[in-house]
Image (cartoon, rainbow, N blue to C red):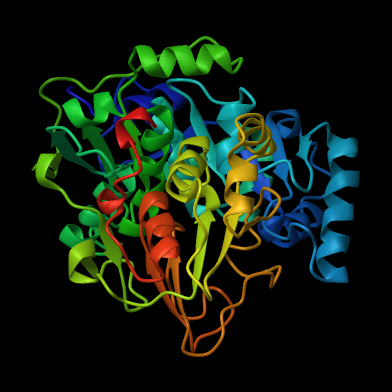
Length: 426
């Protein structure tokens, strides 16, 4: 029976020869992740399990990234309990400032090709960049995984998206993801898996591949996956991953839909009006005033994103009245950015840095709240009304390059207009 990547991974982890969309399977998990945001539900579930031993906890990471640093005593109490719980169970703890869960799992060697990964966050789909099946679950589900190392799944159908051509300098995977949101809509892939293939995917860096898979959550996708290639295998080896088990779809696998997109003519994209799928070409938004700029999050807080910002701002200053916050996706990225002089460049231009984490993205820490009537240009994954703590402010989404160019000029700007930047060198 011909199968897609998702079907092959779920079947192999369920001990089956094959499975098809709609089937229910009980599959063994390779690694699990619990964030502090979903810890209360998980802890309550632990209390109801009548002392069932949590034998899978040593293959589980607790990541303190959402309430980071804790903005109130309740969050601090959650963190304290997770620290204690990790010592009791042998779970891996990543404390405040270590980074965002979706970055840390592959960076710390917890993910390899062919794995089945679950995490208590919808952007667990990011792990598909490494030819692994990453899916979001709730805290109670995660507790069951810690106890039994297994979880039930309904096999999702798969949509194939072929990306051909070559991105123009100054255009990134973020722009492809926004384009896809405009094309399919925010619910266009509900409970589906997406396989991205094609020459444009092969040409992408690992950073951009992670962005490509990460944003599938905004499409409603249950998973997004890429095939493994030499870039994948080299990156995993450099980060201490286990022996990869690459999985490829069968040539005659069944897909519910197929899309072919030539990205060669794609311009930078932006999302507007508090909707992740209200997408326009950046040139349709040129001149829109911005008051604040956010670069980072699990979607675009990687080293290549920070390099884009530094390339735009080097030797310049942010436009008058514009402030900028950058949140690296991990401490390791932060340190490498410091070694390369990127942090000094951005701070000299008027920007600021937060420690690695999710708190700024979801306004838990309250460190980057816009004023009434202000417009924020952000490289985050969502621009929902009130996302940054003020429903009377407007949030637009774009690539790190678009965010930096817009912050430099004070209005939404096509980054390709930055004549002083050699995008091909980044």
